[in-house]
Length: 372
Image (cartoon, rainbow, N blue to C red):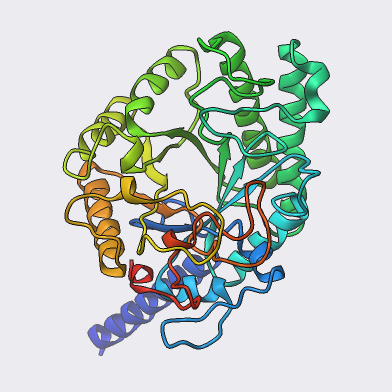
């Protein structure tokens, strides 16, 4: 009887311990390290497209919230861009970004917030300082303070709304020195550049402490070949407190193809001991157009063996994902897969410059590429 009582007590204790562990797991906040691979979508355009009349349909041709379409397809990370004060548009400002983040989190997806630190598009050829900061252009300390305060304020406000992103991107395609005026200037002044980038990072770390939350920092460079020299110079200049290397990879503008793209990715991971994901890529499913806006992706975007078809687009994404994983990378984000054609205008034309490279066909039905 004593032996039976012992084993009954032992089993009861074991059950209680397991139940306690399950409760602990349920109350612990999910970590950004909890996913094996990030399958992401930049959905910055969705709010605007819907306001312009776009209606999205799932693979069954049923009308559905596009955020739900992506979540159901397996998307676990939504990227969203933020401009400082874009007076020329009502989108990609704080209120619009807040709406996007709420929609993404509402369907259980994590968020990567992309600070452009500009009133408009920032990219390798343009890093235009916000108009509100022009008076600080030649005062690195004052400019760094403005950048810190702005970054902290945005994240603090989002946190108060229960919308703190899991990841933050300090600048967009920052191949060139950030916060310039007019044409980008070379070479990079790394004393200035590293100070400014680190001020943005410091603001993220301050939010982590203030909110007792983990927020990963990502630095984003266009094309792997540029990342090789950029991160070497950045780390040598004291930019080291970040978790992620983020890359744009568009084969037509890169020295690397799908057969050798793993090489520079592996070099970056092994050299800097950082996590890595491709935060921008895309591929056309057709070379036709639905509107008069000139499409960015055309014949020169095609890779041998990957035709401009829905299956060609899907196979491109599968092959790129395979290459990223082979290198040790952990994520792939499709750029603007919902920028479909509408009657609204961009700065360059009426319609979309991307409708042949979205993950929706010309009837706004989810295409094969969505299976990625």
